[in-house]
Image (cartoon, rainbow over all chains, first blue to last red; front, side, top):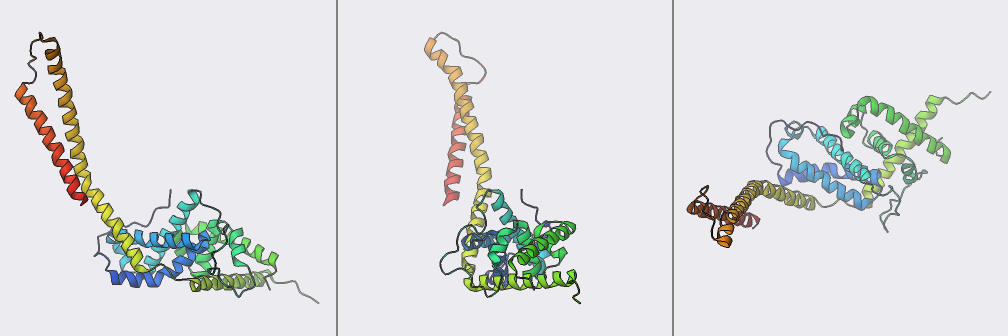
Length: 177
Length: 126
């Protein structure tokens, strides 16, 4: 079962207008899509999950009074939905992440010394999520906990292990100074 | 004389490499293609919202349909129990539990409830 989302039983708010939704989408779609691609390894699946994440946000919007005025809380809520969707997908027995080759012309051209996709493939799904939120989204432990549904203590421990595994990979590949 | 490498500094450097690599990957992922258009997401959410509203609206109609169906089945069963032996055998006295007009009324009422619920369901689907 997916982790429960934050309490959304507060007083109802006005429905989200299409223009306001567009602003919200433009601000958050890119980061959430990157997170989903890092999580599942496939752009087509990630785009579908991105649409589903925003759909769920829209459908729950009338009861999201506490988040409506706080863009950062809204962002964390979106990451939380995305995390739950990824988890549901893995539990449903979806294929191995990054197992399929990227489509023609969509493989990112990297100018770094590390094969980051190979590194992500080596990590467990939760480790990929935590590293992404910590390094790309620059979230602290409390924010990661809110975005993933884990406790702060678990985030700290799991992030430590994820870093250790990533470091191990980087040192094995000779990417460390 | 070579001093041993400081593990804290080494970890910091590795973290920097990791951070740079992940950010470069994130940037390249964003540059590789556009997110799905916002109108598509909006349309998908609207469609689902309508489907959800329809399902909610249909719930009482379905309950009424079930009650109507149950009434009709009970009336039919009672009618069969009441009249079929009389017609076949022709000798059994009429049973006094439910009078024939009342039975007719029950059957007609059940039929009307069924028809009404069915009509409502069809109208709500349009």
